[in-house]
Image 1 (cartoon, rainbow, N blue to C red):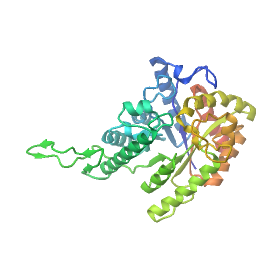
Image 2: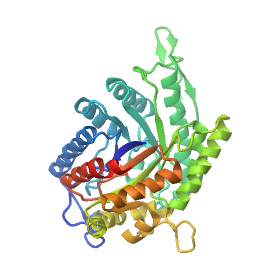
Image 3: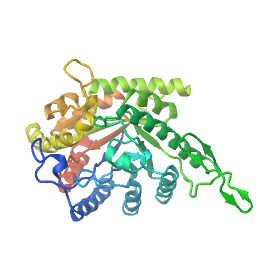
Image 4: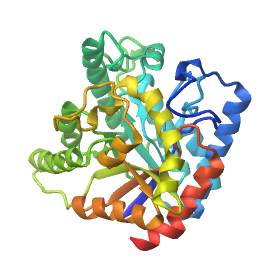
Length: 382
């Protein structure tokens, strides 16, 4: 089982929890944000030292509140690739609509090549209107009044951008003509003629591994159609199992061959390891509640199960007890965390596991401790 580490990458906070301050009332300066960036880099090196397989970051912009402060996982990854010699590096996820598709292709190819093939291409459609609309796209976030139209635009633009990146990676020369993108633009003069094709420089010199989050029924249909891996997170365990199996069925229908059990599917779980269950609950609660205080209004909890057995209404801000019941958070002693992961491993034939050990506001010393405890106390039990 391949095991990754996923770090949102926020500022260390000393006042996290379900109560005040409101997430939007926080404001951190450049020194605190840069300190967090340096410590996130330390976590990547530490993950390599401890034998984890992939280090994942996020891409977010303009978050002066301090929750996610790395805007460019590819640039960050190039630095990490020099300091960590074995671990793979990915962004969960590069928000495609916030990039010019050819710049994303160029930058990823550079990281992939300079790291000796250790870059992993994670792609997503985004969640935060503030950054999406400032950087050239729209997003169907729960708190966006134009959610339906924004989501339709985003899906269409995203699909074309991925077509462009795939064509640029796969061909010595390429052209593309769509609704949102045309490459090369028509009428560019060049030495008495016109530019008819482009060449990506550099192109990847190693096979590219693609992953995309599976958070909605349309995405559940689209990801296996393209042949990418699907990432599952923050869903009730029974919903995970349903979608996990359906993903395999859709992949087989699209490609004519069955996936091996667990293949091309990744599970992300949030973990907290302490000596006892009671200590783990107390340790996890502040960061858990801060996480949902910030992200709940964006609709992130719609994969939880409501009282009627159906997906929860968007906007739910769950308690830690609900998260433990949904099995999105696995907390306890090393033996209890190992048992929770082994249960998923057996239910899903899990091949790709990703751990989320860094809760909102956590110190990076605490994250280092969690990584070490997993490597030394949990992994040996699996």
